[in-house]
Image (cartoon, rainbow, N blue to C red):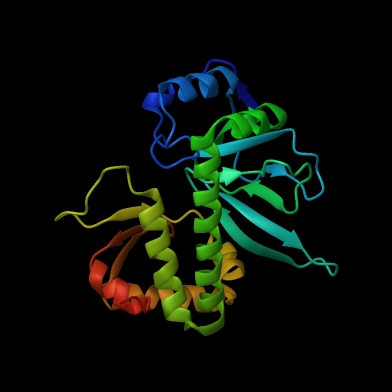
Length: 239
């Protein structure tokens, strides 16, 4: 069941304030967004939008993880991307969803009615500029992902995915220090296999290999401690 929060929290205290579409907004612009926004929360496994749905809202992910998926004619489902905190859902000027979006953990969205937001974008250069920056970052990430899927080994793919999650879920302003980075993998191993173009067996084998080599430690199937960040970067094929 979708829970809609009617009471808005203060934008200045928002955990994604300096990474989301509102990152460059001044006080007056934040006040306009504050007056427009509302929250929706989705349970894990719940659809957020289906391909072809009319998009009545656009939104920033405040917390949680969602998958962007497409269904083939033969019923196969392919994970095309992830929506993590501060990512933007929807496109101004586009009325219908092109892909399925589903919550894989509990997801909270900061939502804006699409038509109201489109008008605000036209009247507010800071928001329009930030949307352009985020779209270009998304394009760069898609190109990196094409390289990962086409050229990286299975070990490099798993190491890259762990680094991606660590960087994107790190608390804002938190610098890496002496304490090993810790993270919660947002996807099951089966979902990771779909996302990375691997088999379930290969995902499990490569995670076990990184653990055996001392690069990571595991608590359960999802909680990861990165014991050697530089070695994990090397395993991912990063310079």
